[in-house]
Image 1 (cartoon, rainbow, N blue to C red):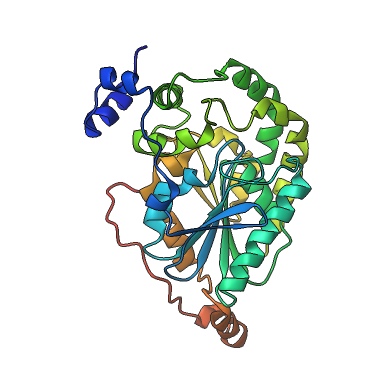
Image 2: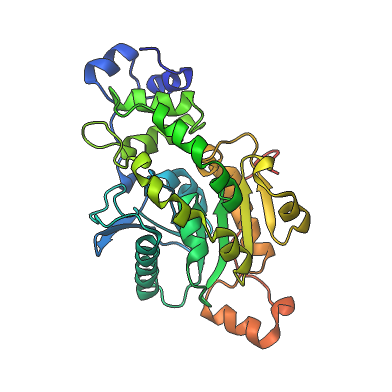
Amino acid sequence: MNLNSNLQTILEEEGGTTDTLFKKKQLQKQEWDKFFDNMIIVNGTPIYTIMKHEPIILLIHGAGHCAMTFALLCQQLKTFCSCVSYDLIQHGQSQRTESLEIDNLIKECEGVIEYIRLIKPNTNIILLGHSLGAAIACKLIPKQFIRGLIVIDMIESRAIESVQQMVQDLRKRPSQFYSYSSAISYHLSNNLIKNPQSAQITVPHYLNDNLEWKVDLIQTKKYWLQWFKGIQDGFDNFPYPKMLFVAEMNRLCSIQFKQKKYTIHLFDKSGHSMHEDEPLRMAKHISDFIFHEKIPLNSEEIEQINTSGVLNFQSSALSYDKQIKDII
C-alpha cells in the first residue's frame, strides 16, 4: 500500500516507519482528554467541554463525523471563549440509538443547551454548525441567550442540488480499512481533510473496532431532504449576528452574496472540513466576529445593551492574539 506523503510526515514525527506501522496495523487513536477538559454523558449524549472564558461556543458536527472534528479549532478558541461539543445520535461515543430524523437531532441539541444553561446559567451561547450541524443550529428556536450563529459550508440550495452527486461519491468510498493509517491516507488523498495533523486526530474516531464507518451515510439518504430544507429560512431569520464560511464561491447564490446581510468568509484553499484544514484562521475570524459584532457575553451585558443601546456598548470579549500572516 502506498501512503500519502502527508501521512509519511506524520509517521516520521511519531518516530515510526511504514514497516513498523503495518506490523502494528494501526496508529494509536488519540483520546478526547488530550483536547477537551471534561466529558459527561447526559441522557446518552457525550458532551465535551473546555470552560475558560465567556461566551460559550457550542460546536455541532456534521454527518459521519464526531466532536473530535473540532479538536484543533477548540485548542485555539479556548484562549478567548469556552467550548462545548457533543457526539450526535449514533456518532462518536454516543449511547443513543434513535433515528437521525431532524426532529430527534434538534431535540438532542436542545438537551445539550439545557445542560449548558444548568452549569453556566448566565453565559451566552454562540452556535457553530458544520454541514448537518449547521442544519441543526439553523432550525433551533432562537433564544435571547443564543447571541450568534456561525455556519460552516452548508447552503440549502446547493445541498439539495448535489444530492445525487453525494450518493455517487459515497458509493465510491471504501466500506472498511486495513488500518487507521489507510483511513487517514484515504481522507488526505481525496482532500476530505487537507490538514494531516487533524486527519490523524479525527479519522480514527469515525471508525468502529472493525475499522468500518460508525455511520453508513448512504443509509441516511432518506433523511437528507428533511435535514436540508428550511436551513436558509432559519439562517436568514436568526435575530442576532451571523457568519458564513464557504469553501467555494459557487456554493453561494449570487443574490445572497450581493445582499451581504451577514459576514461571509471564503476558504478557497480548504475543503468541506475547513475548520480542520485551517483552525487558526477560523479562530481569528470567530474572535473578530464576537468583538466587531459586539456580542454580549452574558446576561449582564444583555441588560447593558437593553438599557444603553448597542452603539454605546463596549465588548469585554477577549481577543485572539495569535499573529497569523495573510489570514484574511
